[in-house]
Image (cartoon, rainbow, N blue to C red; front, side, top):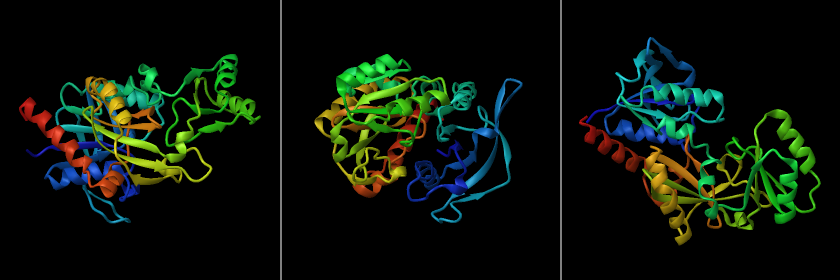
Amino acid sequence: MTLRIAIQMDPLERVNIDGDTSFALAETAQARGHELFVYSVNDLAWTGGRVTAQARPARVQRVRETPGLFGETVTLDLARDTDVILMRQDPPFDMGYITACHLLEEVSGETLVLNDPAGVRSSPEKIFPLMFPDIMPPTLVTRNRAAIDAFRDTHHDIIVKPLYGHGGAGVFRIAPDDSNLDSLLELFFSKNSEPVMVQAFLPAVADGDKRIVLIDGEPVGAINRKPKAGQVRSNLVVGGTAEATELSAADRMICERIGPELKRRGLMLTGIDVIGGRLTEVNVTSPTGLQALKRLSGIDATAKFWDVVERKLAARGL
């Protein structure tokens, strides 16, 4: 089958061809003969009951200066003119992101939107794991200062992070003798009305933070991201390094627990973060790590992704 695929993403012109997962998904789809279009969330529009996008036909290539070649902009009726829409713009998970989810929900019954926008909207990456408190580190979500102080009194060494942050931004360790908690909370609470997430510090982060890739609720492989010496953030975008790893029994148990719910919500491509056998995040917006996984382990998760997509569309009669 030949599919018409629209990718809602940040500018293709600026992607890192060696690391970007959206680029890798596009590259694999193109190799299978599928037709690609790209557009940004700012190109979405609703009018007269239809959702459209000002999109550019695109071809991808592994050329750093020009990763994308483009045709003339066209207006796509996203329900009628596409077979698959990939919702891949980066967070922040804010009202703009939620609005984009609402708009794509309007077409999700007519074309296949991945990840499912209703599933994305209801599954913020630090909120989703709260369904499974027994496999998380000790966690508190609140704006209440007395509750935060009580949590620190119990766990002593804590991590404080914004509830809707991404890429490791705004993640702080507050050690038992650290006097900066007051200033940090003042900064967080002055900027928005959201709670913060507070978690017990996991010393196992020194050994790495596993990114496990799941497709349609099933684990396909993992990489281990190690933080710089003396750091607690292992995200690759802030200087963490990736290495090959295997799934442990605890990792597989976590996947078995959350996989059915991911599948039920239409969250086809997800990346979960696990430290010392504890689930910390479930990335559903634009999960990354697929290129590193292929380099380190030989596992081609992009091929597995399109295999599942093509089977689902074949079952629909396409």
